[in-house]
Image (cartoon, rainbow, N blue to C red; front, side, top):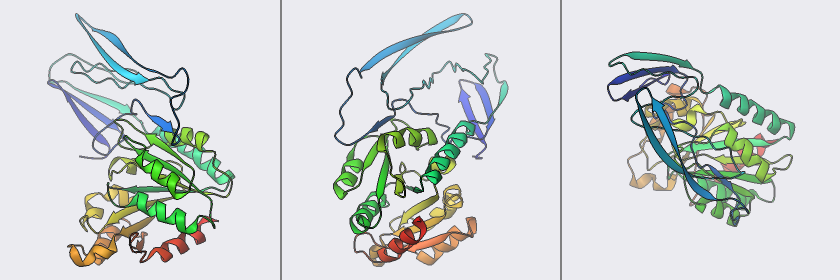
Amino acid sequence: MSSNKLFTFVKNKNYNLNTKTMCDTCGCGQPDNVRITIPGEELKPGEHTHSHSHTHTHGDHEHTHGHDHIHSHYYPHTNDHRNDDAHHHEGSTHDHSHGKELKVEIDILQKNNLLAERNRGYFEAKNIFTLNLVSSPGSGKTSLLERTIQELGKELSFFIIEGDQQTMNDANRIQKAGAPVVQINTGNGCHLDAEMINNAIKKLDVTDRAVLFIENVGNLVCPAMFDLGESKRIVIMSVTEGDDKPIKYPTMFQSSDICIINKTDLLPYVDFDVEKAKEYALRVNPHMTFLELSVKTGEGMETWFEWLCNSSF
């Protein structure tokens, strides 16, 4: 499916959205129930969960649906309603005729890009070196951060934003490693966006001349579309994945500056060709820089530390 077309079929109507899509394939909107939390933080006084319903009228019929959400000061709540009657809100149109194709022109990334530039300006003004870590689940992002904090924590000031759909697990690990951290739980969302980062920064209170790591939701598709205002984007792949990942998920590798190949200690036991992986990555991004390492054994970590120290300030 093209990255600038999203086809949504509702009953027997074909809605062709010619957009700069928020995601390459899934078309997910901004998620409900996003929470930004410091480890150990409880619900604030007056914050509560409740349900409410909406009734919508369409011509000669109406329907009602309900949903739960948490009222919070962490992040603005948005309603993303989906149902079989395909009601549409601002900036869209609908028709009950059968088999009619409706085209809607929307730049749905515009708001994100404007906020990303705002984030970038803030980071540059405070000399914050911001790295967006992206990968598929299980590549070793959190382990890489833990070891980096433990080894370089006396030389560099680290702050971490963790992104996951649910749980505080990774934020708790990072806090134990010794760095200030906030957790963004995206609910049904498959990526972080610039507004989430903007709100998380207000809770994290990053100091000047710091290194800010943003560990994105594990996903090689949707996060590729979202500029967060980062200085560099680092894609991490492990040797337990296929060496053809760069050509299967080209947008992520095209949009990244650095590729870390992790878990090299497992190379004798898996069918992974490092040189072939690099070749595939260079096909889609000729400017890609590679780092090979094993977080577990420490092999290659010095090269990563050297790059981080030399690039920061």
